[in-house]
Image 1 (cartoon, rainbow, N blue to C red):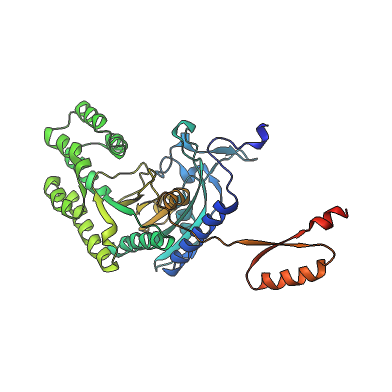
Image 2: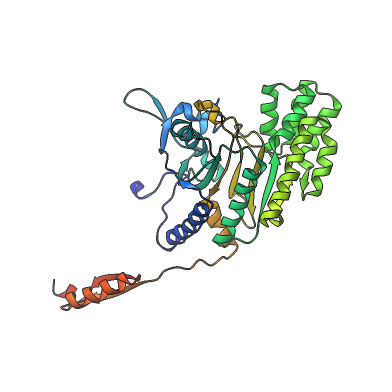
Amino acid sequence: MKLLHTPEGVRDIYGNEYARKLWVEGVIKKQLNSYGYMDIMTPTFEYFDVFAREIGTTPSKDLFKMIDGDGNTLVLRPDFTPGVARCAAKYFGDTDTPLRFCYHGNTYTNTSSLQGKLKEVTQMGVELIGDDSIHAEAETIALAIEALLAAGLLEFQISIGEVEYFKGICEAAGIDAQMEAKLRDLISEKNIFGVEEVLLEAGADDKSREQLLRITDLLGTQEILAQASEEAGNQRSQAAVLRLCELYKVLGEYGVDKYVAFDLGMLSHYNYYTGIIFKCYAYGVGDVIAKGGRYDNLLEQFGEKKAAVGFAFTIDALMAALYRQRVLIKETATDTVEYSHDFADQLNAVKERRRAGEQVALNPGKATEDQR
């Protein structure tokens, strides 16, 4: 019967699996709140313009769209960050001190079912607004690492890149915005053959072509940063590498630098990122379990000029990583008590146990059922 099945890309979660997911979400929320992040809830659907191409978020073809009674185009949120940015601009525009928000909810992306990806996933994340310092970036990355450790994940790595490094090379090469956008998509997919084809069509010089073709090779520990700076050959890209060096020092002060690597070829399909970006990968899972970065121009789209940085966990991918790494999550057992003619006595006993924090179900016994 078709009504018993879910559409492609969504699924039911119940029983022990859902209990484990709730436990992990609770651990992460406690960690986010411990850093002073305030809970925020934005609408599940917003006006289309909040996620329009100018904002730099999910492509229009991947959005779930609907029309309201007044003829407005609405979309289910594919990403929390633009909605939080809109909310911050509307209600906290006059605030001078940094704002810290954390969120929790589902996002919706209309990806092809052939990709095998879920269209509805749970995300938890933070946004730190109004702080353009390297310490803000270090805080968000350290918080992501500490939250993963609190959830029990052991084998993972945060890969960090810098959008400005790529933009500096493009600027020095005289590559226009349209060509830059093409190259960004190709490089983010590690499609070097596509990059070479676009550069040849654009007539890029040999030096610029070599720099952009080699950018995906610039990955590794902090030693790779010296090589990246040397190969950049322009001030903007070298400044980006210097920021990564400073970030690494602060992460060392947090004591989380061992979980960090660098990838100068890391870019994002979200073009609202303006500086440092990062992604988290875990042993046993191909999907990214967390991603984030700096987006200093996004709030300006909503009328407020404020620097910002943040990240989001994809809880579904994190749960898969915990399962693959055989991380045991304590489950609370439910006891069952049966009653017959002694319902009142059993009920009083069960009430006491529930007040003590136990999970107890009260069911009719077989004798009671036979009397019906």
